Length: 337
Image 1: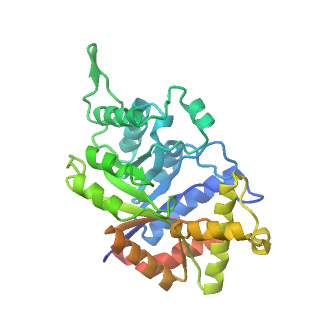
Image 2 (image 1 turned 90 degrees about the vertical axis):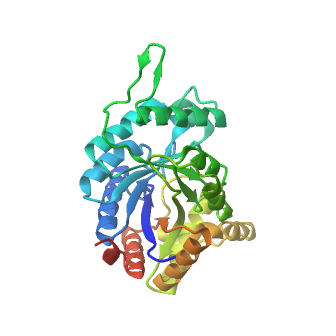
């Protein structure tokens, strides 16, 4: 696959000893860096009830990110639709489009982004059913196209922006690929969540795709954790930190980011090593030559021309350098500029 576009997914991770304000400011700085380095889009996630991740309201954070940048696309990766009113999501993203026309992505998922209790508190009417999610998507399309109404008249999602955000359906297991195809929306395959997701998810999406005004043809992208180091030793160090974090997540521990010494001194148990092998499909790591080959192979395997990368590291410097090395490997500056 030639001319692969790369984007960034950021979760506003809170490092050990840092504040949530510092985490958010790092996200803003990362968006500016991504634009400078030639990345195509910058997405932020929705998580709740976690001291590890400060990113709970992408629709609010996106205002700051779009204002702090000039041309990179800014989006949600994603809005967890069952947590919200479809009308309010339409209004939020129409306002974003009014402020930053042609630069906004609305990535949507049906996972809660938290535990079930917290999700119920976010939206007490959430029944966690697929039928309700589909109904929300249908309503959302009507709100974006000014065709929503009842016997009492039309219901408008305001402001009535002249453009609407590019919409993406997030899928980690493959079940949502048919939903994306049915609504004629983009598909974002979350390999960073499910390392076993297969290319047939994209094949199914393309085969069943119904053209829409926004997407005359299917458009799929892939997302994955990526860690790039200047040396193999550095890449292994970054990889161990990511492995440790995923193990902690599986234990239900979503506390502050661990310090480097704790991670480097940690010895995985045999059971944890088995989980690392299980999670290996979620992560790409190595030097920039290794990473370029692995990402190119993934793009070819899934037949996509765009990959969104998520990078967690215990220092801002390591994370910045990873983004820089990947940009160099793919000549992103030259491609964009």
